[in-house]
Image 1 (cartoon, rainbow, N blue to C red):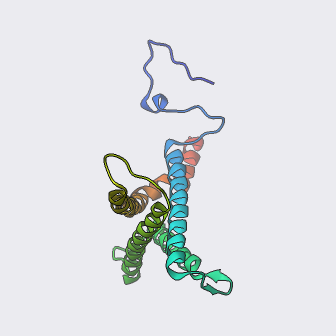
Image 2 (cartoon, one colour):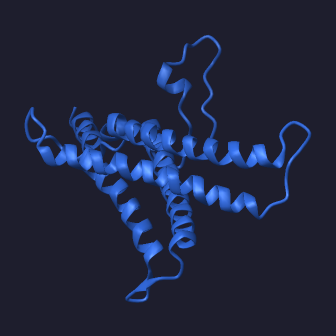
Image 3 (cartoon, rainbow, N blue to C red):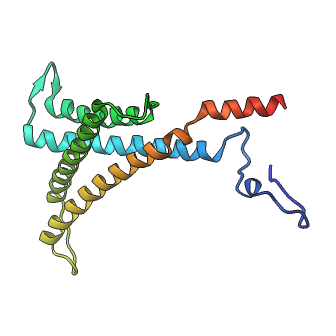
Length: 187
């Protein structure tokens, strides 16, 4: 169903950006869902590159049937999610406990370690491909591409998690939305 307005009437700003769907969905909820999908995809990439690099470094060593590489990759991803969970929990007071700073340090260390593992995984992957061109030689590409991808992953991780920490509560404030809807319905 297309929402049509006569030419002589002005649309309100929220009507101009509205998308007609069979169910009511706010723009911030759509953005939140897109960010959640991006985070999940990003974590899958981070998990697999970390596992691949650690498997190359550690070999097929296992504990209770699980590879050490997979155990460590799960730990790095869990640090990310623990950091996110803490960012979304309400603050108890004006001062943050020391545990928050330890978690932040662990998260930053994990992000840096993951960037190194991404560099190693990309380097290993590129070694098995025959590439190069007139602008950059194979050796130059082997030097530049892994560093570029690892840096991009590290920066994206920090900025993306930062965006979640700043806007996450606003994007996923379903309780606030329910309160507004209830207040609007009673009027």
